[in-house]
Image (cartoon, rainbow, N blue to C red; front, top):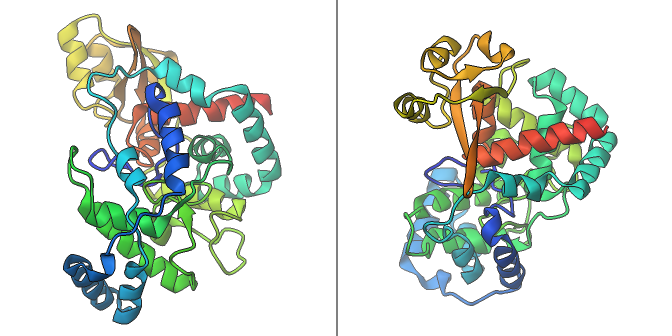
Length: 352
């Protein structure tokens, strides 16, 4: 889901975001929760009324309209449950995470998506510089090429997370109040009933799972039919994903990763891992600290990051991430997510 910074972990959030250990349970909860519509007196709450008045004034919307829409929101307890982090101490596992997304059915679906939208993917690459396999990888990881886009009323989950954010994790209610505001602006502009759009348990929508703020800032009418439709227009989804990545630093013609063996020296390895996924070291600096880059990585002119991918109880995997790897993580701030996108896209490209 675009945008997903570390402090939020959501903008571009796949509906099946969780790491493999709890995916079946979360999927079951999502199915259960999508049908839940528990009453909550948002119409009578003073904090909601204050929010409605502020949004109306700030965004020049009719105050009565804003209040009426929020009065229709219902508390969605399933969204509160699904937003909670996995149990403490659960080991991440890149090998298992990869198997969830890079598997035959999803690869075949990706090949069909590519075939059906080859012209749009080519146009997006020409305009934004983002290769087709990256766009195909994102749509595949996010929604299985439109099969899993979420069945929660977006108004409900955004209101719930804005005004009844669950305790037990860092408070992100301010973020969701901002997204609720963006959702109301978008609904009004597009002439939509705010109770109609469906999405993920965090409010992401469409084939690329854009949050409302990302729709307003980065979505494009790529097929030029006069409207932006991230559900029904794969062209708009393709163009919007490419535009999003370009706006977040994608560099035309640059690789996403290079092969690397980390330093044996633990201190040198810790130095390289300290910035996490932010490219911070030149190839020369990585080599000086004992990392072994492949031939292409040795000649790379830009900064690199040593990216560690844990494999449960097995030895971790490592890649050297470029600025373009970092750009993919702007969609979802996770190295596991970015590697799943890249690996799925490459697998689909090979099958084609």
